[in-house]
Image (tube, rainbow, N blue to C red):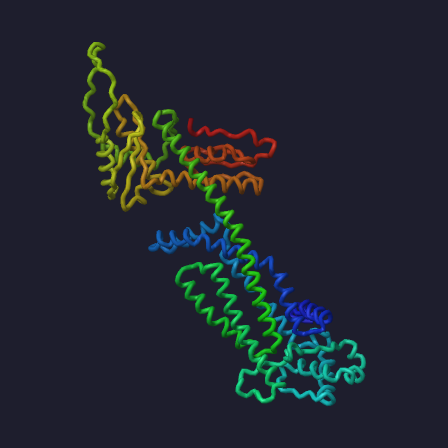
Amino acid sequence: MSLWDYIVWPFARLMEFLYNWTQNYGVSVILFALVVNLILLPFMAKSKKSMMRTTRFQPKMKALEKKYADNKEKYQQEVAKLYREEGINPMSGCLWSLLPFPIIIALYSVIRQPLEKMMGISSEGVQKITEWAAQNAGFVSTNKTYDEIGVTDALHQHWDAAVNALGDLADKLMNLDYSFLGMNLGEVPNWKVWTIDFANTSTALPALGLFLIPLIAALLSWLSMKISQATNPTAGGAQAEASMKTMNIFMPIMSIWICFIMPAALGVYWIANSIFGIIRDVVLTKIYKRKLDIEDAERIAKEKAKEDEIRRRHEETERLRAEGATVRNNNTSKKKMQIIQAFLPMRAPQRAPQRAPPREEEAKPAEEAPAQDYPEIRAFLSGLLERMGTKADIEITARDSKGVVVNLSGPNMGAVIGRRGETLDAIQHLTNYVVNRGSDKHMHISVDAESYRAKREESLVRLAEKMAAKVIKYKRSMALEPMNSYERHIIHTALQDYEGVTTSSTGTEPNRRVVVSYDRPQQTSNKPQSREWA
């Protein structure tokens, strides 16, 4: 036996069992389609769920496409990142949908060669039976591809004589009756409808029924695709929609062609498979729509809670920085020091000498300080940005008496932010150094650009949770990339209540990094506290 024979064997045994059970070839083909659909149901359900999940993320993908319209490589990277974070495999929906094709090819082999595949008769035995049918049962070969169908039908018409004449081969023979609803499913439909003799109803009605089988198969194929598209809108933009329109035309035409050149039994299978597919698609859509609605609600609530937590931590950190309650890391990287040395001559305007405090009798009641424009900060940053070859709008907001927040906005903020915010950190460090130089009062200045710090903090929290999940899954420690002290503090804070992991920092600046270690269940109460910031 060849490899293909091993593949076809289970399908042949299934058809044999169904025919022996029903004694009706058409019903056997329909039940065959039902069994195949039930076997493929778990795979098709997985495919359907994947396709529906992919469709639900189309708004995000369209936003990415609009954002990176001029950078296709970056767009592809961001889409791959989105798929990775959400656990989506865009190819899984396509792969499982290809399974029915080898099955229909195997069924075609069973239908075309009933003597060899269903009855298990050797080639020599088939030759002997064919010769007997030609001599004694009136069999005439008109199409060698389907000779075995003709021989099997001739044996059915002369069954008793065949059993008595064929001896040992008779034990393997099956009395297959191809008739179904007045049609012979072993015949190939005739597309030349005008050649049908409608005056003779005994032959015209079966011939017309065979002619309608390919048309019904094509109609149901088209209807199945339309229902699938209605319940699961096309993803991928205008190009994918154009491709789907082409498939809507091509697939029904292919159905008609296949059903007009192959035995009518295959057309019956095509019709039954389309009907079962439509039912399956409608039911799975209702089930997964409800489940995905629940998942989306939970995901949105989780994202909102995470954003609120990030905002709270960010505001708390900024408050502590403004109050001077944080401990700055003195191990400044070489890159920052180079920037400081390069721009150190750009000093802010000299402050006017401070007046001595008034005598007690001249002291006036304390009043609220008027809003300030902070000309030192504005002048220094304007000069610094000009030296960097960029322009930005400078918005300065006073948090309290001890700190201010500077937000930069403009067309080229990527150069201001730099890789992982390194340039922005250097600008902040340099601004604090220059503005507070020579002053007996320290004013903390936080420099941001296009809300980068909040976005970076959110990204780091996601990274921390993803890394913690990996550590628990593989039960081994994992190190993150080198980060500054503030970013390491965010990682420590995000995982301080994460069950099953502990965090620590290792290395020296500027290559100091966070290590996420696996913690056994009995030790989960010993959570690390960040030592990066007070």
